[in-house]
Image (cartoon, rainbow, N blue to C red):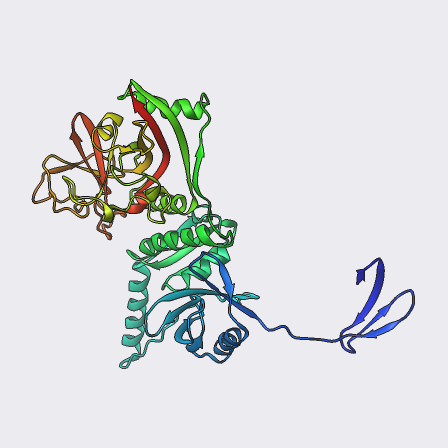
Length: 424
């Protein structure tokens, strides 16, 4: 080996190191480093367990124990169930879950699912029964190729580790390292893929980057970006004077929106119908939406014409009339959020229904309001064999001369811009 501009000969058997030029021999000391364990805390950071906690987790891993007593995030010692497949701690008393990791990482093993069949009777009859069972399993098994690109650039090994908690097989394609082969029961594989999209999106959103950037950045007046935003506002508010345009930055909300977009793309066979729409927050400061972890949280909103959801409008004039937030600086300025919204397969409803808390099931007429799909995909399920039942992604209607959309999923909208303006 070479270091410090000199060459050395290492004898690991005798634990000695000899410098080539001077023949000076020195003894080596071998010291095994104890693995370090960490947990994901509420500040979105990995924090180390104390030495006792690391030793307890390492001992549980080596001896196959599922119960450990630990101190997590300053809380007194508590009893946890530990799952080394999913790397999760579950508090026995409160059922809170905590993500954990080890340095160096645990060795990963491919998922293997085996079972035995016992049959009694005539030899030929047993063989036929086992063969029939194998054929039945094969008929109900589906194998799909999925690109790694949709999983936020996580590696195949990271994804396979995440998939071990589900009863499906995930393996890398032999001739294409960017493709995974997913195999499992029909009607279940796609559900697992959607769950993996959500979980890996959260991992990518919080993994290894520390605190996420949250806030707003002023868009420079006269730039192409400024003009683009003003053009959308002036389409129905031609006399509004734009005072300021801020681009919203919230990486967690972006990742959640991206996950919802990918999920909708899969379930709707490419139909997402992403739109740029306005939203007024009334008395609520817009920052409470774009600086939160939930974004457009309709649980805090008033009940609307189509129940408790998040309402968006194509026309700025609709959101301006009674919904815009008035600033407290005494200038008479108003504020609207300009958002990206995934309307997907929208259900057009002609009559109000304040009891709604989610869209109706596709292919069914709602009992209180006739509906028709405004999307381009008329199928109400994902596959041709109709193995998954889906609801519409949004409600669409017309109010005060504007098309409006209502969504019932936080992650289907991202607040992209905050517009501050004055009506002249």
